[in-house]
Structure formats: structure tokens, C-alpha cells
Image (cartoon, rainbow, N blue to C red; front, side, top):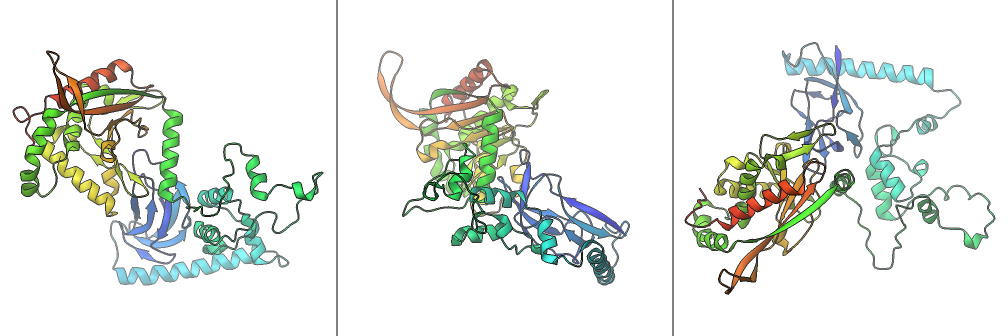
Amino acid sequence: MAVQNITMPQLGESVTEGTIEKWLVKPGDTVKKYDSLAEVVTDKVNAEIPSSFEGVITELIAQEGQTLPVGAVVCSIEIAGDSELLPPPPEKKSAVSTAILNAGVQKKQEASQSVSTPPSAAPKEARKDKVRYSPAVLRLAQEHDIALEQVTGTGEGGRITRKDLIKLIETGNIPTATSAAPAPATSQAPSEQPAPAQAQHAEKPGAPVQPIQPGDIEIPVTKVRRAIANNMVRSVHEAPHAWMMMEVDVTDLVAYRDSLKGEFKQKEGFNLTYFAFFVKAVAQALKEFPMMNSMWAEDKIIQKHDINISIAVATDDALFVPVIKHADEKSIKGIAREIHELANKVRTGKLAMDDIKGGTFTVNNTGAFGSIQSMGIINYPQAAILQVESIVKKPVVLPGGMFAARDIVNLCLSLDHRVLDGLVCGKFLNRVKEILENTNKSSTSVY
């Protein structure tokens, strides 16, 4: 019999960790290869960890609510030789393996109690001394000044889980370090003693205390929001951002799209959006300026071969970035279909791990919210992000000195200055502008 470990998988190109949301198995369960073991949450996607083997679950190493780096062991499985390749009949395997597992676990528990637990020590105290807290638990405890030694855990073996702390936070019954023991004597008068939260936060200048006033609402930070925040902070800290903007006259594009949208929707069953034209133009320009399709890798710059456009799709409380693969090979209709399908997956919670992998350049439709100018944060580890702003009517001076109302859009580019310089970015952005300004009925097909 051999024991194999299951590790946290790579759930996206820029994803470095995942949080165990819920275990779908327990010790003693028999699983088949590719069976789902646990639900995992990251800043990019909700996914499941599949089993790489067939066998019996021996131990759940990670706790629900625990955040683990990619490659960390989450559980172990006992397998019989090459059982994942030549599985025995399920009924016999399940009965025999479960019996062996139960006997082995019982013997280990008895041996552990007889050797490591002194007769005078209470089991609860022994467990308390050796307890380890997950990163998610430690973060919540630090943010809300929770004394973990005063919290009773409901996890396996009495471990404190993230759900335990969330429950305390929601009820307001938060134990602090001073609630069990008096504060040490100081030269200050009792009336001058700072509150526990103020005292702890005073040591951390980067985390000022935010006073709560009547009517204020405290909203716990979700796993997805926390992961988004971490990725944004990493991008800003590691990538020196620079910005560039160009105005584009898309009057002909607007007229062309508006003339097609009704018939297109009736024929295809989804909308022909302006955004599809912009994504197509960016994909074409990336093919001509491949340096824009690059990533920083410390001792080298990696110029990506595939042109995979990440698009930002927002929900009420989160932002997801699914990917249109090989966008340069797709028609405007094909891109419009993928935008429609990916947006639906995000809003219905059906976004799969493969939908977010492999992005090389991001295009964000900030104009959908009425924005006319913005500076996006680069989707790490990519080298640039393009913000497509709202199309607005503006008076423009035409050749010959005549004024006319034209449809104008701002394209705002954020770039990683380690990888890209103003020259190549200016040429790239000018090429996108040229493509869009020459998109019309006579020169452009959506099919």
C-alpha cells in the first residue's frame, strides 16, 4: 500500500494561492481518479481539486477556510500499487481499504496518546499548545484584534477555522487579549489607557484605526475581494506603471455597427457590441507589434506567441478576467460570441479554470460605465492593459476648417516600463487608432 499526496493545483497563470472553501470528501472515503475532492476559491475562479489517484482518503491536511500556496499538500490518499491504472472492483476495494484504514487510524491514535500525552496533562491543553493557525485565520485575527487563545475552534481536532472567526465578528462577541487578564501596570492613569484595538494598531502605521460611527456598516472582506486586492497591490509594487492616451474618431465604426446590430441579433442570437470591434483591432495590432504581447520574468522578457486577450467582467462584488484565446484568428462575430458567453459564465458562476488561463494582454471596457478617462492597473504578469472609454459626441475641426459632431473615444494604455517603452507603445496605440478609424461597411466584414 502506498500513500500519495494531493497538492494545490495551479489555477491560473498569475494565481499563486487558493483557499479551501469546502471539502467534498472525508477520511475513509474511497475516491476514483478525477473525482472532485474540494472546492477552491481564488481571485480568478471558483474551481475544484480533482483526485490524481484512485484510493482511500487518509488525511485532510488543509482546513476549510485555509489559504495555501500552489504546490502545498492538501490531503493524502492511500493507493494499492498501480490501482489508478488497473482499478479493482469498487465494492471489494472500498470495503477492504476502509477496514484497513480504520484499523490503522485507531492504532495510530492509541500509540500517540500513550507516548506523547503525559498523564497529568489534559488532552485539550495538549492540543492547544500545538495548534497551528491558517493564514486566513491569522489575517482575520490581526484585522479584528481577536485573541485566538480564547477562541474555541469547531474544525477537525478543535482547530480554529475562518468560519469561527466570521461568526464572532458578525455577532460582535470578539475576545481580546485584555478580556482574560488585566493589562500590565504603566505610568499612565487608568483614564488615559488606550483601547486594545488602538494600542495594537498604533504599532502598525500602515493600518490606521477606522472609527465606527452610528449607522456605519462593516462588510467582511470576501476571499475573492482579498485575492483581488493582493494581486492589485503586487502589480503596483512590482511593475513600474506608465500611461498613454489617444483620441480616436470612430464615427464610421459607430454608423456601421448601428446599421448591423438589429439584423445581427436576430440572426445570431447575441449582441454585436462596439467592444468586439475594439478587441479585434487590438488583436490585429498585437500581431504587428509582438513586443506588446510580452511578460517580465526577472532575468528575461518572454514574448508570447499566442495572442490571448483578457477581458474584465465585473459582478456586484468582484472582478473576473476571462480570456479570448487566439483572438487574432477570430472574426468580429467570433469575438462577439465569446464576449457574450464568457460574460454569462461569470454572472452565473460557471466560469471554469480553463476560461481564465493564458491571458497575454488585457482590454477593459470601462466605457460601459460612462467613464471617459482612466488609468488601469496592469493584470500581472502581463505588460499592459488598454482601457476603452465611453464613445461621446464632440465637435471636431475637419480638413478645410469646417466643424462637425463626431463620435470620439479615448484609448488609455497602462504599461509596465520594465518591458515596454513609449516608442513601441505609441506605435502600437497609433495602429489601433488607424484600424478603428478605417472600420466601415466597405472595408470591414464582421464574418
